Image 1 (cartoon, helix red, strand yellow):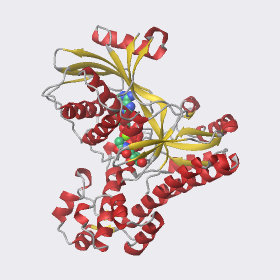
Image 2 (spheres, rainbow, N blue to C red; image 1 turned 45 degrees about the vertical axis):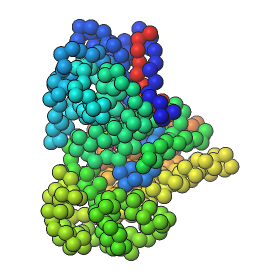
Image 3 (cartoon, rainbow, N blue to C red; image 1 turned 60 degrees about the vertical axis):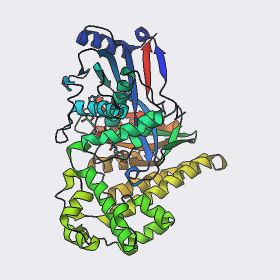
Image 4 (tube, rainbow, N blue to C red; image 1 turned 135 degrees about the vertical axis):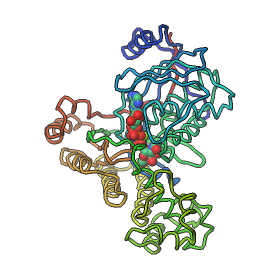
Amino acid sequence: MATEPPKILEIDVNANERFSRIKAAFLCKFGRAPEFYARAPGRVNLIGEHIDYCGYAVLPMAIEQDIVTAVAENTSGIVNLANTNSVYPDYNVAVDKVVIDKSQPHWYYYFLCGFLGLKEHLGEVTCHGMDCLVDGTIPPSSGLSSSSAMVCCAGLATMHANHKSMSKVTLAEVCARCERYIGTEGGGMDQSISFLAEAGKAKLIEFNPLRASDVRLPGGAAFVITNSLAQMNKAASSHFNMRVVECRLATKVMAKTKGLAWRNITKLGELHEKLGLELPEMVRLVEETLHCEPYNRDEVCSLLGIASEELEASVLSENTRDANSFKLYQRAKHVFGEAARVQQFRRVCQEAQSGSDAEVMSRLGELMNDSHASCRDLYECSCPELDKLVECCLKSGAVGSRLTGAGWGGCAVSLVPVGEIEAFQLLLKERFYVEAPHSRLLAYNSMFATQPVMGAALYKEA
Ligand code: ADP
Ligand code: NG1
Ligand code: MG
């Protein structure tokens, strides 16, 4: 239940290879055993890309790959952070001196986003110091939400280390807010599924208010993740925020054209609600009210009747302050089209029992293919490696394939008939990974069929 706190489970650490390894590393680092462990999963988004921050529903599921943090309280008032992967250096900071530098998205800032978010939410004058050792299995910067798994894991660990309890929904909302401290203005899909996921179920995540409902995926369908091996750190570039800003601007320009109080409307979903239209009508409205050529700063300022300073203060973000070209038509058209595809995907899943397996698969596959085309052509959040991978997946037995997560690199998710997973993976190894700049060995870790797993939880040694 979303209104309950995350579960506290008992674990036989000695019988669990991963937890034993984490415990040993913690002992080695801090000279004592951890008091508890927090775990938060990554996710794969099946459909609904770049629309959560516009207020629209998305359809992800949690994956086995996760972030686990071993934790023990300390009395020194310091957050000591260490990582099992030596790529990520140790860091420590006093609980009252935490500052997140947006210009340098170091790994520990993601952890500290979760720490700070919880600290502020709990309204504690001060939080306990904590010794923390992080161990992650989600390929980073690859669209499977390693960043949010880290933020959620840190938030959950901080809550428990301070002897507090909160519902999964509240934790998801707090963590969605505080991940923005790193600079990216994300929606909330990643933190929501990390907390609200249930084993065996994909979820339709809706916002305002945040809620998750079960989506039963057809039995014959497997969702296979493949990694393009191109990485993209979302906080280290302005690509992500630029899209958020373009959607915000499109909202305001369209709202002004329709005579609405545009200053108070920030999301395309709010505009949609105010106009009371259907999604296909919103697509038509984009075609009628916006032009295909990019807008420049002067044009949007003159359309809204504002000065450049107001644009910077109320629409642009810190890292898009100097932007001067905005593709409003293309971004808005993607958002309304993608929101409609999420509704259709869910409907096909609901009606799956009445159709043949092949028919259901082909309808879902088509929606995924259309989603990728829209991300590539209208939203421009794909990249050559991803386009090549998606094409390769489709030629190797996938019924549908699309980029997942923010894009500009990272993973594709493919719909593959259950009986054909092995053949699909073999073909991909030969066709995609043989040419990839990395070895075939890496390919082995870059493809996996997913099973929806449960959301974040706490573990105590039995
Ligand atoms: P995504 O969320 O798609 O994986 P982001 O660019 O949003 O990609 O976040 C990736 C960042 O998260 C990494 O650059 C790193 O700082 C942090 N991160 C992810 N996994 C780990 C890990 N196991 N240990 C430390 N930091 C991690
Ligand atoms: P990733 O790729 O996991 O960083 C981002 C956003 C989501 C969503 C997707 C695109 C964050 C934390 N995550 O995900 O909210 O907008 O892109 O659908 O900003
Ligand atoms: Mg991320």
